[in-house]
Length: 352
Image (cartoon, rainbow, N blue to C red; front, side, top):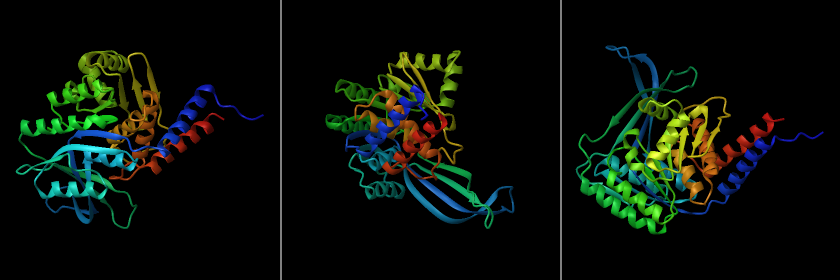
């Protein structure tokens, strides 16, 4: 007798197949992306010995890679899925800023929305990885160096950036605010952008710092990490994650909250529903870029009129792609489609 999938499992498998078809036929929808950009630098080397004067590894550098990160990483992911991101951000007039812009241009991403502040420093995050030579080839993060400006972003620069981004909403299909609290997204600018998007029926996705939730009011969807939701629950003195999520949704007038749990899966909360999408992977390599991948997938889905549940499911597949990827890698159609296929297969096999 042929086996039959449980109705709930079958519905999820059908959802994954529907999303697979959507990814394969992704049209070049327009995404207005506003946020902070970073030059991500990855330094790899052999850590065979300790420093002579301190109990720390001495790394013999073998390679260095540089990628456009933070909001620029979101832009790279959107472009790789075939979407048309219009990135609005700020860099310094230094070598790191030039490298970041060149990286984006090399991937066919518009840089006309990036403002250059001549005497300002571009944010650079350097991650140093080490491994033992001639032994098991397994890199380990040894150190992260954050090199960034110590002074606040000039308000006039942020204001001009907002004005430019507002003009781009006339033909946008979705708005993404990738806010690392470095000055590209301001309280006033965020409210203007979200209000304008809502007025034009454009969905908004916000990826904020916990200290910047006031810059998300009225958003369609907001992204959290599971750790951030737990910290907020404790601060508010509430009993459960569900209660905390609904309190935030009500307070900030969101349609949904998406909580990223890494190897624990993803949660979608609305005022009426809660959905948990478990992770079916056996393990994960790293989590760098998890938020960016989720933002990319949510933007791709919502720009095509997908439901929040479908968009969250695609975001989870994107997160699983990042969890199994090497550092510096980003989404593309091939890897995202493969993740959807693998998940559908695992669900069908586990239900036999």
